[in-house]
Length: 115
Image (cartoon, rainbow, N blue to C red; front, side, top):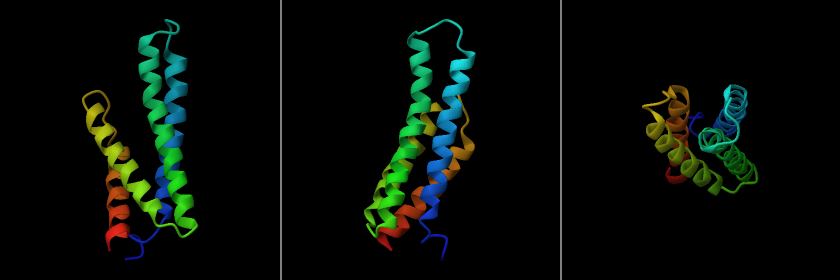
């Protein structure tokens, strides 16, 4: 299965997480009216979780390009964390695409680590 052995899935997920993190922070800052407070920080942390996850996946993608297969381990850990994150915020935000991408990425990474 060529799709399961493609490391471009890490790059696609990294771009998805990173772009969504940037857009999330932009929209939060534009819509927030009460100044610097606890609510603003909580909302910005959601975007920063996405940004950090995207950066870590870029690191994993780079590792795989240098024939270090532990990049798939990085991808598995990050995607599993994003699955948990999506489940935690599900009552407030239905991140269907992010959850779907994370599940697919976790499956691909685990398949490449163990098969």
